[in-house]
Amino acid sequence: MGSRKVVVYEFTSLDGVAEDVARFFMGWDDPEVDAAGEAVIATQDAVILGRRTFDEWAGFWPTSDIQPFATFINAVPKYIATSSPLDQVWANATAIDGDLVEFVAELKTQPGRDIGVHASISVAQTLLAAGIVDELRVIVAPAIAATGRKLYDGMPQIGLEPIRNLVSPLGYLILHYRVTT
Image 1 (spheres, rainbow, N blue to C red):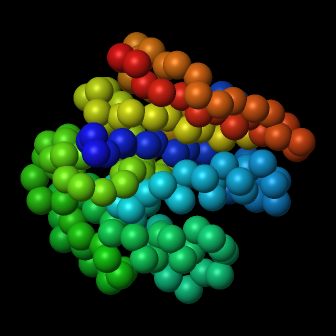
Image 2 (image 1 turned 180 degrees about the horizontal axis):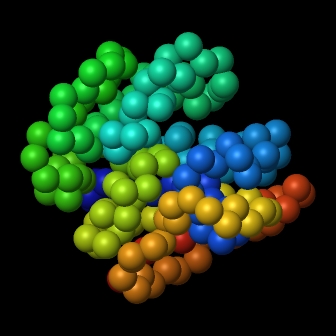
């Protein structure tokens, strides 16, 4: 078996905002969006999260009944990019010791399935800029957020090859790319 894939999975607005998605993302009942989410987590056995995402999610997902993501995210090993100790307890969550890019590069060489990056804008940006991401999967909401942190701000040029892209019945763009550069 070859090396594991790092798959970045993000929700954004049409103008690239990936922060506070609940204010512009209403596609939680879109069957195509649901299917895309189920497909991405079905191949993952590890997740990298940033500290902000960890702090938000650790207070929400352990008691959530939103399936299948709740079962997945609560059970999967979660590696948290942080410079300070984790102050919340969440099953299978571990702070990354050392450099994020080196950690993920090493994790890719170990046996296993895909490694997911969910939300975690800074982690996604760092790993994309380092050339360590294999696939980018983005669900683009039919909305312009206008304000908030954008996924692609400050990024170098990155080549993408389409794998599967479609428009859902509710107008969400479901984009799946292989990173080529």
